Each structure stands twice: as C-alpha cells, then as structure tokens.
Length: 275
Image 1 (cartoon, rainbow, N blue to C red):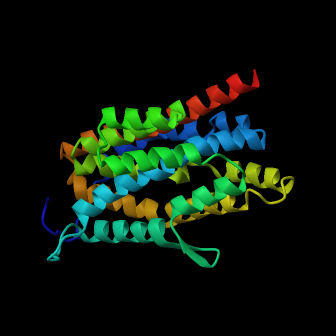
Image 2: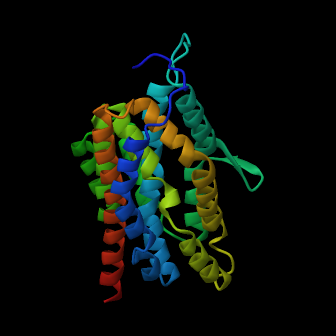
C-alpha cells in the first residue's frame, strides 16, 4: 500500500473525463430503465426488494476492503492511506453501519430489512444466504454458488453478487474503489421514489421505511460522497498516465453493467410472472 500522501495534487481531468464518457451511456440506460415502469404492484415491488437487498449487502464487502486498505484497522495503529480517502471511507462506514434514522441508530442493511418486513417482502432467503456465506468465511465463486443454491436465491441477485466478488478477488484497490464509487444506490432515480410514494398512499404507509432508505442514499451519495469518490479515485489511481486508470475505468463500466443486468433480470422475471 502506498504510504500516506498529501492531497495537494490536482484531479487528473483527462482521466476523469475518459471515465465519465464511458459511464454516461450506462447511466442513461439505468436512469430510463424499464424496471421502474415494470414495478406496478406491491407484489412486483416485493420481488424487486428480494433481489435488491443483495446489492445493499454486498456493497458493505466492497466498503470493508477499502477500509482495510485505506485506513488503519490494525493494532498498533499507524497513520495510513490518503487523507481524502480516509475521510470518505470512515464517513461511509459510520453512515452505513450506524446511521441515525427515525430517532435510532441503525445500519442501512437493517433499515432495508425492516422496510422489507413492513412491505411483507420475504427476507428469509437473503438471511439464509448471508448466514451461510458469513459462517463459512469463504467467498470464492464455488462457495457463493453453494450458498445461493442452499438459500434458493433469486438468479438476478446471485449473478450480481458474483460480479461484485470478482472485483474483490482481483486484489487491486483501484478496481474495488471503482466498483464501489460508481455502483451505489444513487443510481436509483428520483422518479422511482416518486412512483413508490404514490403507490404507498394506497397501501397504508407500508413503504414508508423503504422510501426513507432510498431518499437517504440519494441525498448523501449525490451531495457528499459523489465528489469525494472522485477524489479517492485520483488518490488510488495516480496521475493522468497511470495505467491503473485504464483498469479502474473498465471496473467502473463492469460495475454499472452488472447493475443494468440485475435490473434486466428482475424485469424478465416480473414479465414471466405476469404472463
């Protein structure tokens, strides 16, 4: 790991422009994805949540890889990592593991599972998968597949999680950072929250907690963590000509494509159920 570096360098504008140019078509595809129109009933939403919860969970593994590499979690403590990256990762760990929502401290996964329970969406499949994979402490593809099979996990979610752990298995911090920075929940557009709010009015408020979760991510990720993530990318990838940028850009593209594939899989299953 690179020793502590001062954050007095300029952002590599050309590298970031290359990154943004590659991601723009996928972002537009996600913003206008047919998923949002396909969720027409609470049963549709429940199936969406039963897949999406896996993405909420595996985000935390990306975060923990970065926490290990960009901050110090060892004893004795030593100054480690880059200043901006340390701040970003520690802020996100605090928010994801111990956010203050509705008068209580709660992790975002707990908040999501609560929202599923209020909406009467099944949480047992995900909880069985998480228990199996965490108990084994083995996240190779073979172990993941075994845990998916044992829990009878939905296939779109399983494929998404496998892609996430491919980034982790790369062992490269800049690849994990790229997948982390550009595959977050701020990808869900505000219009979807509006549709859910309209649906919620006729359901006696059972989606209140889910809407709080989405709005919290859109607010924090968009306003605070998005700009800080670019700074982190500059710190872990280096200057304009550093070859790590090429790998990071490909990882970011793959992370967004994985999200498109997840949404595609959910839509395909919803259409199959309606037929």
